[in-house]
Amino acid sequence: MRSVLTIDLRAIRSNAARLSRALAGAELWAVVKADGYGHGSVDVGRAALEAGAAALCVATVAEALALRVALGPARILVLGPAAASELDDVRAAGLELAVGDGAIPEGVPVHLKLDTGMGRWGVSELPAPARDVVGLMSHFASADCDAAFTEAQIDRFRQATDGFPHLTRHLANSAGVLRYPTAAFDAGRCGIALYGISPFGSAPAEDGLEPALRWESELAQTRLLQPGESTGYGRRFVAAEPTWIGIVPVGYADGFRRDLTGTEILVAGERRRVVGAVSMDALAVELGRELPVGTPVTLIGDGVEVEAHARVSGTIAYELVTGLSRSSERMRRLVVG
Image 1 (cartoon, rainbow, N blue to C red):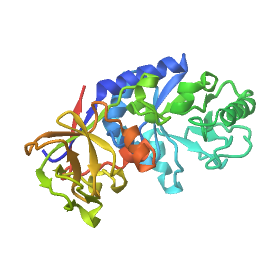
Image 2: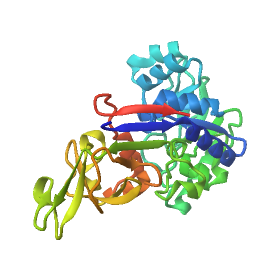
Image 3: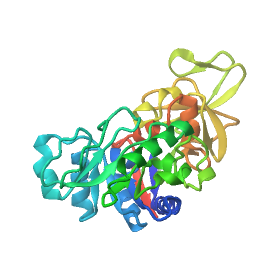
């Protein structure tokens, strides 16, 4: 076993139920872009729909078309821009589009996007909605960290859309759904929390979330370093005393980044520190004693949280999970639950 990624669909369904409770009657729309944040868009999308999600959201038309083939008549919203050359496919597949420039394509259900402070996609002022507009939307810039700005976005969106009660209004992301009840409107678009990852970088359990992803490997080699001996490129770890290390056959080509040196993983159920430079196909972990080849290693799971890895690497959990290898030659994927 070189590397195994396991996705627990029971956890996905549990998180969907948790988010639905927070939405208090508004619809849950499951965001499954970027292959379901690295978890598998088809499997996650199906599980979310089974748990009551009313729609799926993706970034591109290509992502949406793949879901349409796999999942049949589910409601699918494309959040990113669509090229004119893609519109025939959009119409044929019955997709819905988010539009942020006011140019409404004919014969396509459109969600008109208002920029309330994200400073990215969206019109500055809402025009009178055309016939094909079915929804009004915006997006939070800092619901995970700036309450005052988030409340201002909610107020602006409400004022701009109150005159259109016949249209579906949606604003909140995962952080918004979990922290701002007044942001629910008619639907909430939830991504990261659906996977049991905290949008706040804290422990998922604090918000009643269950991580759905587990990443495992094993020790492929162990060796005793004597004082002055090193492991890995650049001799970034030099033993100050006799030190057992284990080599795990996983590296940055698999998604275990170079800047994760110093993070903790589990070896035989014990927390151990990653040392030296992470290389393309291997990492080194400091052991407390000699252990046999084949000893189980948990890179994510059993309390080893991707949020903690993100803090070590100075990034966000979103980047880590979407960066995991999708190559069957490098990683075996199991779906359970």
